Length: 382
Image (cartoon, rainbow, N blue to C red):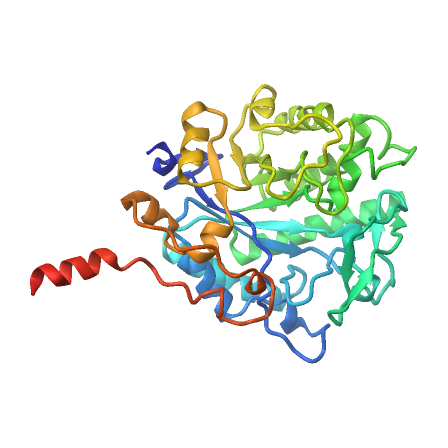
């Protein structure tokens, strides 16, 4: 299978093209004080989780908050404090011990957060003061709340946000990560700058396509200039089709291929496209596929959402994609690569109620590896 063949991104050789998709799981250690750094620091359970899945060609961490303003999910990890770095270093070291490669995904939730997560400002932030419609958000105490009208970022606040990304990159490098992925999808902060439905600015960060992608370019450039990571160690993620976070714009079919063409000039590690429709389709323009991006992007392309072994193999064989990210299958099959390799049966998806809940090992690290062949060997030896 080509899916199981080696592939190179930048100067890193991946042992296969199977990628652990970034998956929010909320498994940092809960405490009574929701602002305790322990709640944002990877623990031994998370070390085990990533190590179990280290046979993938590339592991991308769950979305990780880069700042107070960017956080909004209790018990999800941050990359802000020395304790965060130490916790993540244990994860990275364990993955490297298994000869794995791991990138951290950088997260700024933007308007999908709730002001209770941000005691310094009591605000949420976005390019324009447009609240999500029909979407609930979660307070720091775990209660559902109506989405708030976000505060429009000033130019100075945009510059400060870019500095937050640079600081996060330096800390990720300190923790030993092989690279980083900039989350510019799913209705989080950068995506709301990219899309016309959520960016109504009239300054240099709104209006034209070049202005709307400016913040992503400046984040990318600032990280490279800082020396934390070279361009070929930085990936980025788009979701042109998704409705998650009350997203979707009439010009996405034109805008996102253009954005990819612009980012192609930097020669990044890869473009991660949520091209599948498993999270819903906004139906405001035609579907944007990886084939559309292939026309304008020369580097590695990663596809995502709803893949199985056969569809992923087809994407690679056709040349539409170079890498294939798996989420739900990888949750319940930590030995996903081995199961693909030997055509072993797959376990069913984990129960939804365990995806995000702080349930400890349940639905997180308690999935077994396939032992059928071992049983067969034992039976033959009797």
